[in-house]
Image (cartoon, rainbow, N blue to C red):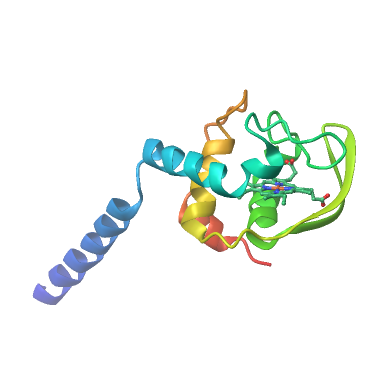
Length: 132
Ligand code: HEC
């Protein structure tokens, strides 16, 4: 019995620690805004509008609605023909070298900026699960 209790105690505390480590959404969005300014703004621009013909928009991007594919692009880079909001791009975005937590933060920011809306919260674990 004692063994079972200590086992239960240990598993509950590891769940609690895990939940505790997950940073609050507003903090993730704030961190994501800084990451955006440092790593993305130069191409996708300050209102996420991109540069016509060169850099696709993130503002109201239909591509971004596919969250897994967007995380994959940010994590591993994106090369070759894509269509965003009916316009074709055939370029190359190299991976910006962000870790999983930073990618979750920047996704939480861009999914809620420039008219984008979502209820989905991106966690570090979600990003870790996206494989090449
Ligand atoms: C050096 C320029 C550059 C930087 C920096 C850059 N991107 Fe991109 N991004 C591109 C290009 C070019 C494409 C389209 C690639 C293609 O044509 O296959 C793209 C595509 C995307 C897409 C998918 C298409 C869309 O518009 O929805 C997302 C999402 C994205 N980038 C997010 C980011 C985020 C987040 C960052 C910062 C962490 C970032 N990018 C940094 C140039 C850049």
